[in-house]
Amino acid sequence: MTAPVDRFRELLRIPTISHTDESATDWASFDAFHAAIQRLYPLVHERLEREVVAGHSLLYRWRGRTPGDPLVLMAHMDVVPVVEEEWRHPPFDATLTGEGRDAELHARGAIDDKGSLVAILEAVEESLAEGVSPQSDVYLAFGHNEETAGGGAAAIAETLRARGIRPSLVLDEGGAVVDGVIPGVTVPTAMIGVAERGVMTLLLTVREQGGHASTPPATPATARLARAIDRLHRHPFPTRLAPPVRAMLATVAPYAPQPLRGVLERLTLTGPLLARCSPASAPSSTRSSARRPSRRS
Image 1 (cartoon, rainbow, N blue to C red):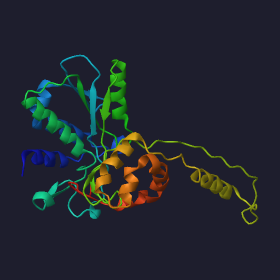
Image 2 (cartoon, helix red, strand yellow):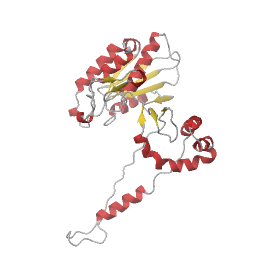
Image 3 (cartoon, helix red, strand yellow):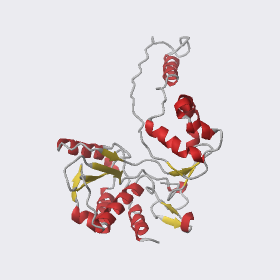
Image 4 (cartoon, rainbow, N blue to C red):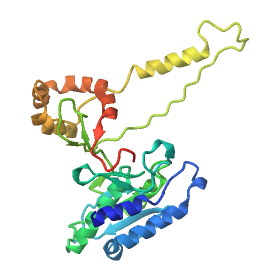
C-alpha cells in the first residue's frame, strides 16, 4: 500500500456528513478533517496561505512568480448521509479489497468528492517538494456543504470577487474512468465534465370553483396542473454538441466499431443527428460500470 492511499483512507474515515438542517451537522468532524490535512500535507500548510471561509470551507493561495490570471482548483470535503445496510462494507472504514489493478476502495466520499480533494493536495504537496513554483497564482477551494446548500463555495467565490480576482480557469469535480458509456467503445474512457445542469424554478397556480368532490368538474385543477407539467416536459431545451463534446467524441472515434466510428469521425455532417439521438441513450450511463476506488461513494 502506498503512502498516498494511506492518507486517502485516513481522510475517508472522517465522517464529514453535511445536512440540509445544519444544526444536525457534526462540525467536530470537519474540524478533525482540517487538522488531519494540515498534518498529512505539511508543505501545503507551510508555504500556501490558508484561510477559513464561511465557518468551515478552506481557501488556499499558492503564490505564482508573476501577476496574472489565477487558476482555481475546487473540491468539497462533505459527503451525504448513508444508509449503512445498503453497504457491503462499513461506509467510513475505507475498506481496501483486491490487489493491483483489481483493488477497490469502499468508502463514502471516495469519488464524491474526497478523491478529487486528495488528488489536488497530493499534487501540490509533491510539486512543492520538487521546488515547483507556478507561473501565476493557484487557489485551492474546498467547500464544506456542497451536498446541501453550497454556501461555502458561494462564500469563496464572493471572497475572490471582492478582492478583484477573476480566474482564468476553474476546475471542479467531474466524471470518472468508466466502461460502456459510449456504445461500442470497450476501452476505459475518462469522462471530463465540461458543463453543469442548470436550475429553473416555476410556480404553477391552478384555480377552480369550490364544490363537493362527488361532483367534480370535467377537467379538475389537478388534471389541468398535470397537463401543464406534461406540456413543459414535451418542450425541452434544444440539444447540441458543444465544442468540447465534439472533441471528446472525435478522440474516442478510433476505438469505436463501424458504423459508429464513421459517425463520430464525420461530426460536421452527423453532429445534429447525434445530438438528437443522445438524450434517448442517456439513461444507459446510469447502468455502466466504473473503474473507481468504490462503487459506493
